[in-house]
Image (cartoon, rainbow, N blue to C red):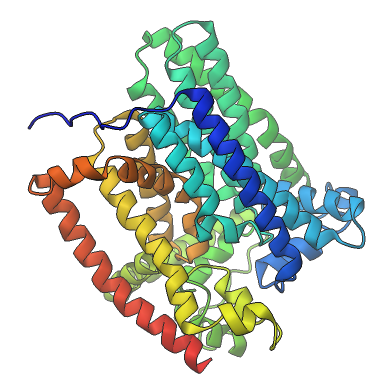
Length: 461
């Protein structure tokens, strides 16, 4: 098969691309900040409210209180509430919009690693404009900050891979530090660490000794910040727990007699929650989060062994949930006060379905980009990340919130597809074209059904 022909459009210079990005990013940020005033605060739901409530005076009780999750989102919200005691919510959201804009710059840099400044500019601007990453910045979950640090770590990583001198080693240390900050915001990334190191070992062209040195520097920089929270957990429980102390509960939720949480925590799970999970197997009575995790993991594996058919059906549904065409913020919009702009104009079946088409377009084009792109390092890294998150969702549960970990990767390859759409069209009869066509047909068939269900849900309340 012949190599792709170069695009007839010349790639912009780095200065031109970054200038264009800065102008559009500033304009979009102004619109997003204005929306904070016009649309008013969406209500805090579920874990979002827990983050806000538990963050009050969090630093005063850090060493004596268990907060379940990674600490830095609590630290961020505590500092915001201290600085803005009256308008803390709007300040937190405004700061997260700034963070989301900065993440767009990292996404642009990663797109440049994939090909050139055209792809980088397209990816960066798409990340700033697409409703899914933008809307999530209005919520108080830890995903916005985690995406910032993970994108920063990934960009540092690919830049350092090109360095064959001492700068490459120091670069890996910075990558480890940025990745530590990622998991201190969102622990779900933690077990991606061995996959990241595997990718480095296979991708680096440095001698084996230099690779070992870089890996050790990465691990040392990573372990430093994380060990502080692990020490805190050890002081509280006498057990080694690096980050989250409620993982045992996820095993209990994921494999039990009731249906696990769905794409936005609706459906049978919500009804079981309201009723107190009648008929569920009891939680373990063992003390200590690490001991509880081991016990609940054994219980979950036993449940899987006893119910293979049920587990297989649920696993397929969890994967479907992860890629559900709804956005997580729909939950908040639907409980906005009646008469408000959001409730009357946005939280309606057809506007929501229309917004969801932007997610569908992102995923379809990203799929094409992942298949057609010939670049190796960034694509293999992205596939590792997507596969890792997919495996976690398949085993535990797959609300749309969890895909935010790989949305930046999808946007990058969406940007590649937008820039190279003519080349993909020329290869439509290749095996890649046939493969993408089959994937698209399956995805669209499933999403058509789910979108209709979404319309019916919001039509009937």
